[in-house]
Amino acid sequence: MCRLLSVLLIVAIIAAIAIIVGKRLNRPKRIMQEGKLLKSEMVSRDGEMFYVEKIAFKDWHVSLHNFYRISDRLSDGHTIVEQKWSYEDFCDVTIRLEDCTYALNRQVEVIALVRSFRPIPVDEFDRIARPLIM
Image (tube, rainbow, N blue to C red; front, side, top):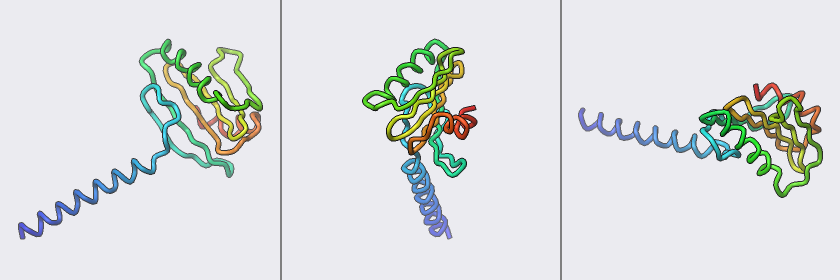
């Protein structure tokens, strides 16, 4: 009886490890390497797939600095087809590249990113994906 319980325990441990490793392998790769990851998920909305990622920083100053670093890195080496900046605080931008569209938004010490998997016009992207940031 004791031998049966130890075999079942070993099988349960192996199954748990396999589940944890499987979830890690299926997780989307982070786009923003800076900060502490708060959220990373795939979302389907209006027939489109989006990748949503949120990261946090220790204070607003570090967040602001990294917002512009991330924005530059995401568009570096790509042709910007269309872009729309918020003129309230310049920490809200939607950019359409030749292969995707993304929105980057800074909320004090949190930066949120929503990225499509195909280029979508900025106004349509904002209508569909902007609620995913908030």
